[in-house]
Length: 197
Image 1 (cartoon, rainbow, N blue to C red):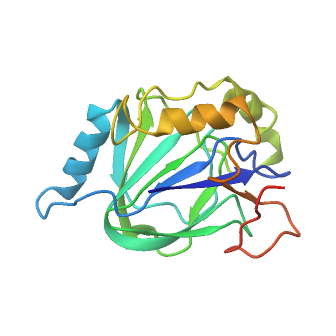
Image 2 (image 1 turned 90 degrees about the vertical axis):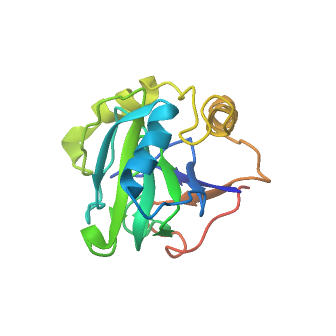
C-alpha cells in the first residue's frame, strides 16, 4: 500500500500539488551491500544521480527535481512541509518519494538513518532553505517539472506516474485516497491530517 500525503505550500516553503508517497516496508534489504542493492533498484527504474548518506537535520527542499529516499539502515522521524508539518517514521525497508517544493528535515541525528537518494532521469538537484530570495524562481522551476515516466521501484508499470498524473489533472484528486496537510500556521498538530472538503 502506498500512503499519499499532500503538503500544501505556505509563505516559507512552496509545497506541492503532488503528494509525497510513502511505501512502508517495501524493500527487502540484504545483509551484504544493502546500499548498493537499493541504488541498483532505483537505477533500473531510471532514478539515478544517487547518493548514500544520512538525511539532513534542517528543513530543505529541491525545486529542480523530485527525490526518492530508500532507507537501508536505522530509523528516524522525518518532518515534511516545515515546522508544524506531518512527521513520518522512516525505517529500514521504507521508501519515500518527495515532490519538488516539499521541505523535509530529519528530527533525529543525521546518521541515525542510512539512505540512498536518487532523482528521475538523473536530474541535478538544487538546495533551498525557505529564504525569501529563493522565490518566485523556485516556484517557476517546480511548475516546469514533468511528472516522471517511471516509479522508482517498478518502472513504467509502477504507481507513481498514475497517482501523480491524477493529482496533476485535478487539484481535487481522489478524495477517497488522499489526505491533505497544510503546513501553514494555525492548523492541527504535526501528526494530524486534514480531510479534503
